[in-house]
Length: 485
Image (tube, rainbow, N blue to C red):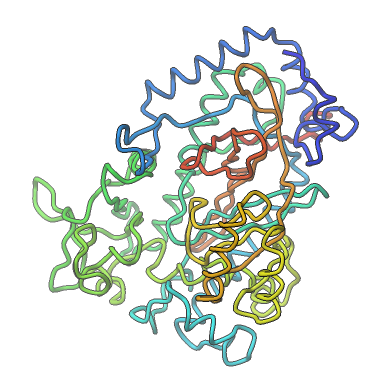
């Protein structure tokens, strides 16, 4: 299938596969040659095989608004995103720097609050946080780490620079799809994995287990780890069951666990109660413990926060970690890095405007037709305004929301985020994408080699979320120096 390189050369955005002269980027040269050598029916046949495999394996996600069909097959595109290892090494260092600083920030907020007292982080932002949990004050978790799993969203602008779009520190999802994408690509393009040095991602379940096991309050060669899921109707249930199986952990729901008078957490089994050392929770704070948070929650475990505060169980991510998962807090991350690490940020933030600042708010309200406006705590692409594509009525409605609650909104320029060739209706065409690498921290730091590339399947769309019509690609980090040796 021959690529129309001129279409990419004329593209205003940076393309991950083809440069501005219509030539393949060095890391993607072998992929480019392979694609050009394949007849159209061969690539289409591989795409159909992938779709059949996804259906057979039950790789799904849930769309709650679709009452007729709760589960949908995972939308996967056969053309991978390719990046050179040298570029990735810098990104990896920036991701690790960022999570290290954010964990120190969270730990400080729940203890001494030095950053507030020193005037680096405004008390007004903290007081307006929906995710700051007073119940977590004074806790000092193992290694001072609160966010053990982070999914950081990255985008590349037309200038070629990689920017951090947001940090996902509460219950980040998507890593199972990253792993399954790689397995499918190995089956569909075995020749590429034989001829190219594509760095692996397969060790993530082992790394995740090691990260969790390090949190165990008991000394054991094999701590008891449980993945706490809200159940089969959760949009990420496939991932919960997948990771539990891959790690050899127990998949449990709230009623499967009980906290006894000794403040330990036990799992109900057919042979009696078994103590649980670490819980990888995939339930939001509000529903985690009806004793500490929402009393009407049927998803959580009564007494779980008490057990965690007593040091009898490890929880990842820790309750309260979401205080740093806030799009307003995001704008302060460069300052947070400088304050705690005395380093300059390796990865830049997207330039941002805080609507709680009078001058910034006036600018945002005057330029709503140019900006992307985001609420502080929404996810999945919901609740935001893409100004250039919004109607006058939508912009007027958002202006009212901003004036009523300025703390809840921030704005950014509309980036021309990068594209990559994507199969659409049997043809290859450029589509916008982002990248979500996953970073782990407990007693050590680890970052996935690449991550989950999400792609907007609709022409011109910048919204990559699967819940809003997006798909995904495998991400290849290619060691070009090894290939050239």
